Image 1 (cartoon, rainbow, N blue to C red):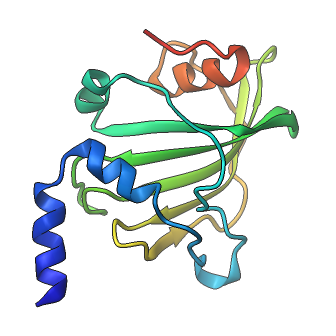
Image 2 (cartoon, rainbow, N blue to C red):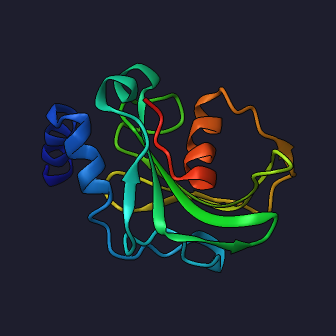
Length: 155
């Protein structure tokens, strides 16, 4: 009964409230003994304004405190909170990622990711690092990467 009440409350919560709740998680254990990625410590910066978040269906945030040289050029942490339910995950699910971008060479790689449900349970994690791909600067992801490279938020 308690779970049903929490689901009902989550279904009525605003996307902003869901994003705030997702960032209220302290530490979430990763399945299979993977490194803990889903920590809220840091300085999370919202990449898109609320209208854009509603359009794309998720809130994208970058941990400005984690931006540091390394990997392809710059390493950072990113979180995406789903504002709508999908086939695979409920609304309020957060995908934490450890990423690296080569700003000059237009390359990016996600080295690790973890999906955390709205109630804080770990739902999935990466088996290993992904492949290096080209950055499409005008895409939603490219705009988040541009913030990491330049410090300028998209309009």
